[in-house]
Length: 359
Image 1 (spheres, helix red, strand yellow):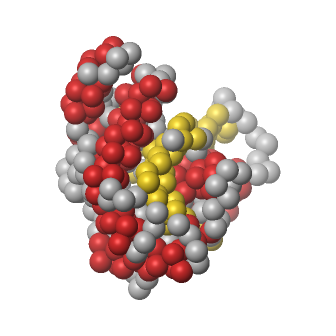
Image 2 (cartoon, helix red, strand yellow):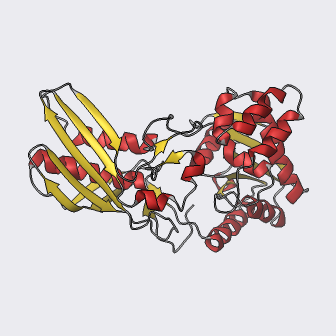
Image 3 (cartoon, one colour):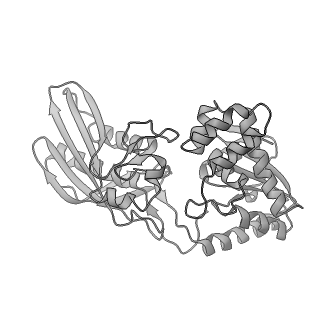
């Protein structure tokens, strides 16, 4: 659910795909394009105004000014540029690369391999789709090179955690749904209270609290055949774990299912009641301590100590089920710490939307 009265915006991935589509259309038609329409991964359509259009015989470029809505995003107002160049009668291939202000991946554990440009999988797929849409009928062998850039991206990246995560030289092109939903603590907590009240009023005795839409959809798939929960039971808590658990207890819920991916559940297990990056840190040294004290997991303590991200640890462990169960146990313990009267179950969701653990 999106907090009421806050305007949503669009991800850097959506803006990049829109700019690429515009540049491709200008190159194909050899004429200006002022606006393009995209179908976003979430299923919604959106229109993007193009600026700075330039056209040559074999190239075209334009940019989209990112509108993050009411979200306090450092990239709000940034220019997301796309340059498209075609070389005819060459090897038939498509190159998507970063330019000025786009970072490169230098550490493992992220969605993009080390050495690649920081253009995440969903935005890359969006870019591929718009290219195929625009050049659907082109049969002449050619090399098409797409360059995405953000002129002040390197400076903006200094205001993020990119360097710590191993994204060097600029920003990432991000997004999974195409939309940026605003983060407003008061709006979210008001909405959480209302959602829990509605669930209780509808007869729900167990709330299914998810950290995001991917986790919520996985919970819906996994629990449909077992718990058969009513729709009102599913509550998007976002980063507000502590508040959501307390609200459930105060309003008479008997238990909660916490659904989230590994990194969020690690933060919860470490005792963070607010899991947004601005309010919590990923303390993998704490996880290393857990592992060193757990029979059968001692060998992963060193991996946790040197891991770049929680995802890096999970992937290097091979999705070790003992590790997964341990993190879920720690997360469940935090529910009991905050609200001893609630039963606590944890659903860990994998990075491809699969259920890794439930219990």
